[in-house]
Length: 326
Image (cartoon, rainbow, N blue to C red):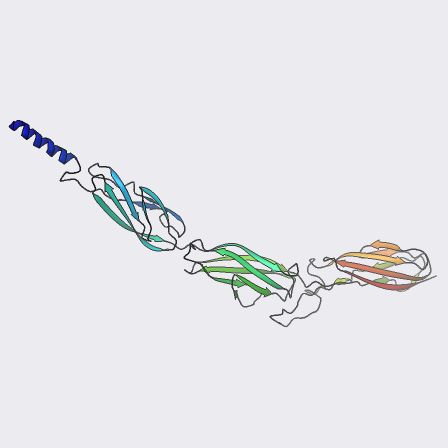
C-alpha cells in the first residue's frame, strides 16, 4: 500500500514538472523585426515575430501587437501603415500555452514622403498661348501621407519671365513678350516641409493679328509682251510680339516686328499668296506663290490683286493698277 502511495506521488510530480503547472516553467521570449527598415508614412510595413520562441518548447499561442499609434493587431506576421511620420514605440507581447508572457518594445522611425505632382494644366481662353493673354495655371498634387492627417501646405509658381512668384493650387499669369519659350516651375510643399518640383516648357506666340498684303511690281514701266515680276514677299503677318498685360502694364513696344522680323521664327507667318490679274478685256488670271511672273498681251490698265493668308487662317487683300504701254 505504501509503495502505491509513493508511486502516485512521483507520478503526480512528473505530470506537474512536465505540464503547465510545473514550478520551473519559463516564459517565452519575444522577438520581432520589420520591413522596410526605414518606412515612409502611408507605406505598408511588415512586422515579423516568427523569431520569438519558448525555451521549454511550449507552443506560443498568442502574438499581440501595439503599434504605438493607437492601433493593435494579432498574429505572428502582420501588416501596418502609419498615417503620419514620426517615432513610434512598437510593443510585441507573446504568450505560451501555459499562460506565461513576455513583451518587447522597439522604436520605429517613420519618414515623411515627398508630395507627388501628377500634372500641370494650362488654360488659355483664346485658344492658344499668346502674348498679352491671361493664362490659368493649375497643378494636381497630393501628399501620399495625407490619410486624414497631412495636407499640401504651399504651392509656389515661378513663370520664368522675371515676375514675382505666385502661390496657390490655381493661379493666373500673363506673358507680355511672345515669340519665345518659358520654363514654368511649380514647387509643392507639405506641412512637414517635404517638397517636390516639376517644370514644364511652354511657347508663347505673338499676339495674332491680320496679315498685311504688300505688292511690288517690276519693271516700273511696263510694255506689252514684257515679263512682269509680281512680288509679294514683303507681305507680313501683323502679329505683335510684345503686348502689355492687363495686370502688369510693362513698357512694351507694339511694333509688329519680332526679333527684327515680322514673324516669329516661322511659327507666325504668311502661308499663302493668291494673285488674280484682271486684263483690260476678258476674264482673269489666277496664280499662286510669293513671287510670280506674267506677260501682258494687251495694252491698257491691268488690275493686280494679292490676297495673303497667315497661319491662323486670317486673310488680307490689296490691289494695284499698272498701265501697259504699247
